[in-house]
Length: 111
Image (tube, rainbow, N blue to C red; front, top):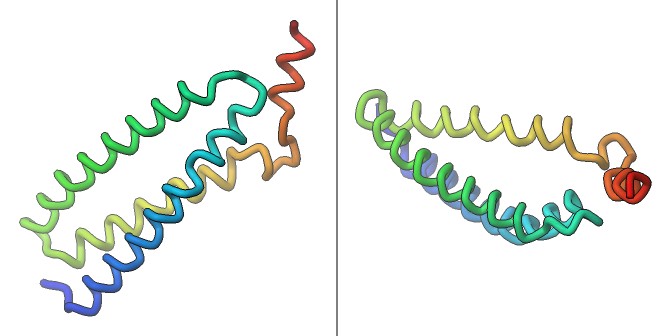
């Protein structure tokens, strides 16, 4: 089953908005996570590499899903998988625990 033009266009628009916002917020999130550790550039490089790998795998696997199951299944699978980082972000970010800067304070105590 193929998706309608409205479904495809709305998915592309939301993907562009989400990608733009995430590209803008990425350095701020990395700076917050690595606050006081001196590892900003390492984490930026590693996370950018993970983004590239994810983009490559997404296109590769998405095309195979489209070929065998259609556009709706492929886009629905992408929608489902997009909730994984949201849950990880909500569960693992220090702000959700009220501990911003705690890692940097722990490192200073150990020195």
